[in-house]
Image (cartoon, rainbow, N blue to C red):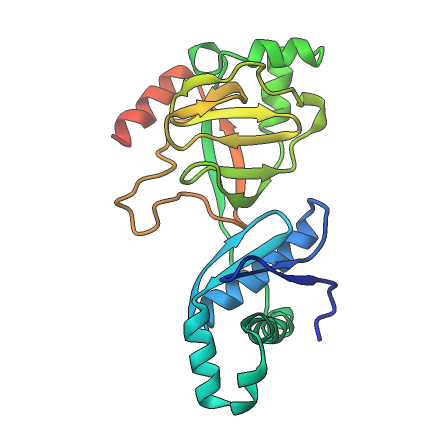
Length: 246
């Protein structure tokens, strides 16, 4: 039995969700990541995919394969619902995942050119918080941010750990197009736009790195569990790195 509290509930006819808590914090996310890693290494017959969020793991499967497979190997399973069969599998996985050492994660340094044409909203964020632009840059580039999950658009990282002194509300009217590589703030969150897309976050800078490329073996530069460190750079350095990555 896991030492952690969790809830398991059905998610339609072909999904199930395991929730470890209701708070956004690194300890709960560690439980989420451990279970996801164990599923990755031990996919059961009929497994389709999993999706990580801040506090939970959603697991999707083919119910016909699950029922047929377990009926074949265990006649007692014939009278169980698919939900109960998967619930039993995941309870065993949670116990096993608790005993695993922490997975290896990367710390990714992301160069950012703050302000100017690359960060058109940094002045608003500074005024909103009664700080200078230099203060915003210093505070934003200070922490190591944890990547809690990837979502919204391909490769978009939801980062935790931003200092609330630079929090700012979303724009009242979203932009129709935000350049790829833009670094934004919304409330107490910060994140990076890997591709050009509409968005309502306050844009404070941009990185010349290519955060998502469909032709790479792992298209997303960042993955859940990684750490991110933003490194301030000049406009000249931005162009230099941009050319190298073209």
